[in-house]
Length: 199
Ligand code: GDP
Ligand code: FE
Ligand code: FE
Image 1 (cartoon, helix red, strand yellow):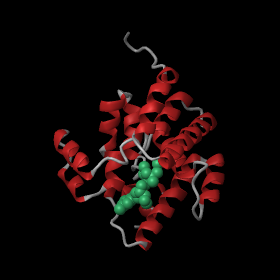
Image 2 (cartoon, protein in one colour):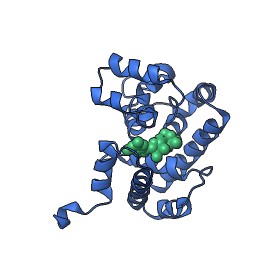
Image 3 (cartoon, protein in one colour):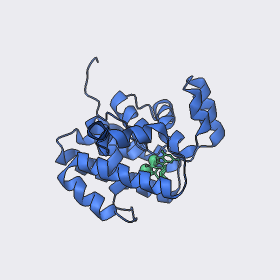
Image 4 (cartoon, helix red, strand yellow):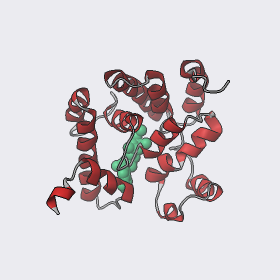
C-alpha cells in the first residue's frame, strides 16, 4: 500500500455529502464553483486535476464552525497563540485544515497546505497553493469589481493572477480599515512589491 496513488475521484461522493452538510446552500455552490475553477486551472498549468479539484471542493469546509471550535482546535494542535487574536476570516483556512483532516480523512499534505494558505497566500506558494488561491477568487459565482480582469489574467499567467488578487485584496482590506494578517503582507511583498529593487 505504500506510495499508492490516492484515488481522489473515488472519494468525491462521500466528501461532497459531508461538505454540503457543513454549510449553507450558497457556500456549497461556491465550493462546487471553486472545484470547477481549480480543475480548469490545473489543466491549464499541467497540475494534477483530481487533487486540485478536491482541494477546491473542501477549502471552505470549516467556514461555518463557531469561534469556540476554532479556539479549541488552536489549543489542541498547540498552534501559535497569536492566532487567538484573529477571526474566522483567517481561522477557516489556517485552522480549518485540521477539521478537513480529522473529519473528511484527507491527509494529503499538499491539499492541507493549500487550504491553510487559501485566504492569505504565502511568500512561497506551491503550484497547488496558487491554483486554490486563484480558483477561490475567480470561480464562476463570484461577482465583484475586478473579477473579470482576474479571470482573464488566470487564463494567461497564474503568477500574474496571484499578484493581481493579492494587490486587490490588500487594497480592499485597507479601504475597510481591517487588520492585515502578516502572511497576507508577506504574500504582497513576494508577489506584488519589488521591494528589493526599491530599498
Ligand atoms: P471565502 O472564504 O471564499 O469568502 O474567501 P477567502 O477565504 O479568500 O477570504 C475570506 C475573507 O478573509 C475575505 O473577506 C477576505 O477579504 C478576508 N481576508 C483575506 N486576507 C485577510 C487579512 O489579512 N486580514 C483580514 N482581516 N481579512 C482577510
Ligand atoms: Fe475561504
Ligand atoms: Fe472560498
